[in-house]
Length: 335
Image (cartoon, rainbow, N blue to C red; front, top):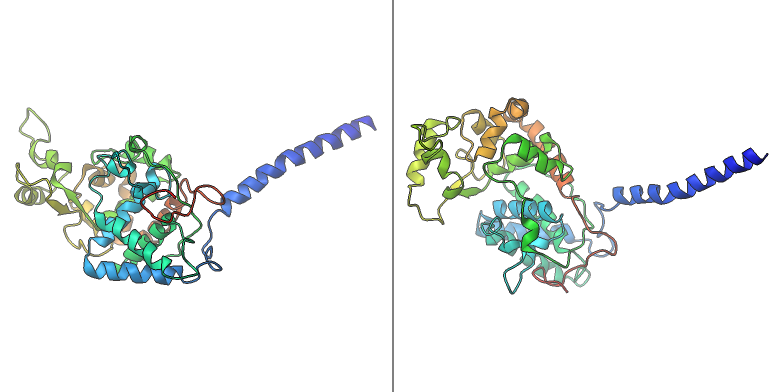
């Protein structure tokens, strides 16, 4: 009898200890939802979409700038709009050297969408800047011919942003596959996710300084001045566009074939040795990732599906929900 009582007590204790864990796990799964604003701002998606469409008509840069802004936000502190915060002493995330090249059109898109939402009485101060950025990113993907997908919502905005937090959290243009996989894995993303998200380089541009070594000084002290992995004809074209004393503001399309269309041309370019950055081309030269590049190059549907999976997972990284964080009144400063 005593053994039965002891056993029952142990089961009860185990159950009590397990409940909070189960609830916590359930909370993780239910942090975000596709209809989060159905009662507070039912028109959130249409309002944001209209602003993004207007901005996109004004300048194509809206698309790559917004897409890159989301990535740089999520990879540093999580998807919390910390990259949007400004600092009077230039010590916020956006002031880090790795973020100085973020085009202003991405920031402007989010700010304009926030202003439009605030014009709606039901939506005023109800939608986080982090969610606006996630929605705007989906919209620019669609506007450039990419796949449409449902965006999970319910993120809240962080109150702090530090320049030091960016250090070692964003991939470098010279990264090899191991370094890329390690950084993405730290954010819960697989190698396939990483390759799919790299496909976003089908849009956007890079400054000459990011790849100049590949076309001028690949192997110092030898006759190998051009990276052998780089298509030679393409390398010579890049030299014309990026002379040695080039204006640092000059930028080159990441995708030399269809730079304004979200498609799988990026992967076809890698097959031809036309990956602009070393971190692009390594996806094809490394046998561990080559098969996925070949798959995405030959099957745009497979790429689109993998991209949707990856960017949805990216949107869950480090999110603040519930009572954590805040809904910023001004996306550039904490309340």
